[in-house]
Length: 169
Ligand code: AR6
Image (cartoon, rainbow, N blue to C red; front, side):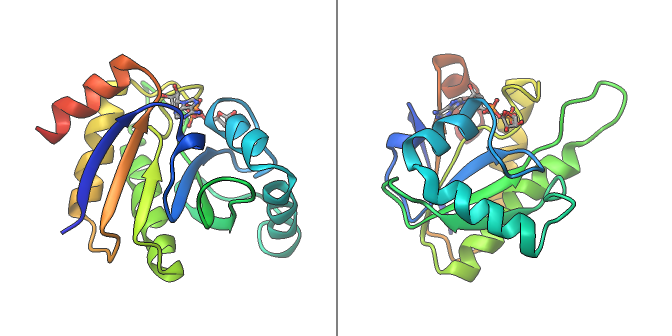
């Protein structure tokens, strides 16, 4: 059983074996959590991302997938970058959002990570409604077979924290 913990705060201040980044396909950085992780983690993360682009992901990391790099200066061993779907009212992309959590946990298992911190993937710049993002996140982690012992959702603000709290009750 994987324990689920909720924290309100900045994920770049979190200590965990692996910290998950809500990245974009380019893997070359952006705003939101992605910007914060690269800022605080330092240039080693981007250097790893560039290597991954050159070796494996010339066309970018597909939505719903995950890949690990060093965590640089962060208090973690790895950053797991995952690409959430942009929210759409016309098309149900929930399976892709669930895939982000599943694939990140799969990468964590491959690395031997026992504690993993997630942000609310897709629930910022990508526009996913927070309540639904929280439901998919919690349901997917609960349904995933993994050796990860603790998943911590690090929620940036009070509404996000409340949305996740409603799901773990
Ligand atoms: N710690 C924890 N949560 C955070 C932090 C932080 N330091 N900063 C923001 N959040 P977002 P997305 C919350 O936009 O929606 C980037 O440009 C934020 O309030 O970071 O998946 C990427 O490069 C929200 O609840 O990720 C992509 O282009 C949640 O984290 C795009 O944004 C996710 O917001 C990805 O958009």
